[in-house]
Length: 202
Image 1 (tube, rainbow, N blue to C red):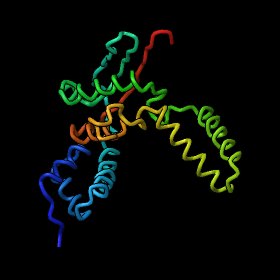
Image 2 (cartoon, one colour; image 1 turned 90 degrees about the vertical axis):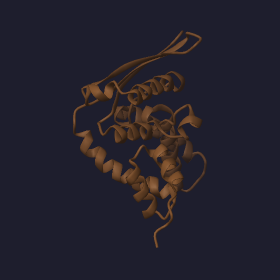
Image 3 (cartoon, rainbow, N blue to C red; image 1 turned 30 degrees about the horizontal axis):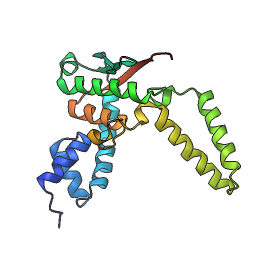
C-alpha cells in the first residue's frame, strides 16, 4: 500500500528542491514519505536532467552587484542561463542577488571544485595528512581524517560547496543545491560563471 502523502509534504519538498509538484509527489510515494530519501531520489533524477541541460550553452544572464551597508565589502557576480526570458525572470534575478550577498559575506576563493588548482589541493591534502599522522591514529583512519578535512576545506573555500550564509532562509542548503533547484524550476542550464569580491584594505 502506498504511503499517504499530504499536500503539505509535497509543498515542503518543492521548497527544498525546486522540483515539480508531480515529481515531488512521486518521490515521496517511492520513499514511503521519507523526506530525506525523497530528496536523494529527486537529486538523482535532477542530475540526469541537469547532465542534458549542462550540454546546452548558457550565453544569457546577469551581472549583479552587492554592497554591504557599511560600504566596506562588496561583490560582483555573473550568473548565466540560456535565454533572455529567464535572465529577466524575478526568481533568476533574486538568485543572482543572493549569490552576490553570499560572496561578500563568505569570501569563497573558487566557484567550483574544478577551479581549485592541483597544486593547491595537493598542498592542503599534504598538511591534513601530516596533521592526521601526528594524532597517532591507524593509517586507514588517518586517510579518512585527511579526506574529511579536505571536504571541510572545500566547504569553506569553494562557492558551490558552501552553505548559504542565510541558513534560516535557505534551510542550510549549499549554493550548488540552490543553483540546481533554479535550473530545475526554469528548465535551463544555470551557471555561476565568476565572481569578484572587494573589501577595504585587502
